[in-house]
Amino acid sequence: MAETLLLMGPLFASTQEALEQQHDVHRYWEADEPKALLESITDRCTGVVTDGGRGVSADVLDKLPKVGVVSVFGVGVDAVDLDYCQSRSIRVGNTPDVLSDDVADLAVALALASCRRVVQADGYVRDGHWEAKGAFPLAVRMSGKRAGIFGMGSIGKALASRLAGFNMSIAYCNRSPRADSPHRFVADLTQLASEVDFLFVTAAATAGTIGAVGRDVLVALGQDGYLINVARGTLVDEHALLDALTHNTIAGAGLDVFEKEPSVPEGFFSLHNVALQPHQASGTHETRQAMGQLVLDNLAAYYDGRELLTRVV
Image 1 (cartoon, rainbow, N blue to C red):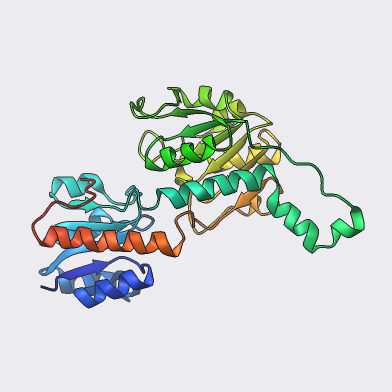
Image 2 (tube, rainbow, N blue to C red):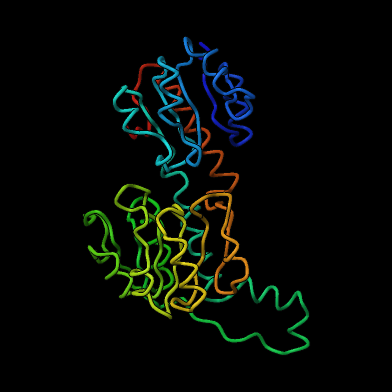
């Protein structure tokens, strides 16, 4: 039976098409008067579909008393008011694991782009400098260096397996040691940063991780260190990072995420020691298809009276 759903923003095309074929979907982001839209479906809307960036607020959910499920297209649920959902017994599902490999792949790509200066070397060729000025300046090796991973969840584990292929020593900082990880646990993030050449940020955004990578961590990482962030922009103090890159407190950075996306501080644009991406670590056809299917499967499970496949609360 078709259910009335609120869709907070556009999704991967095939997922949105399937969603709208199966259910009575109302597009929140297109509403001229969002309040009027919510009032028009308040007595029949039973579910919300959103992505990790948009989430859904308590204010919206409060106007939809029959909602019992929020299905999130993405692994991050920091933009969903989980406390409110829990208070109303609203089930929340996300799409973990299916995107871990792609995110880990891009983390490695950003690390290589940073230390091997891939973007700058590309421009050197395109601008004719290779022929006019000779060889491109030497870069920094990644193989054999020390890697630190902040957040040893499914993405962190996938990343660790890839870094091992580069013969890197691997340590990690997590809320607690992982019994299933063979790598060295370091409880303090600043200490971890002081002991590695590459610090990878793969942690979830929580009250304990937001802003965790601040000035002290960057100073500890040092002038030969690289910061790679494929988690959430809010985990890094952007002002401190800009200052660290500008004054060579660290060697470089690779960033797929930012604090106020899609707005990116213009200070990054003139820097040659940072590689920038538009939050697309999971942006492959294969992964987005798998994420979309999991969104649909979580909804189907809820409406069939079964447990969500990937329940958060």
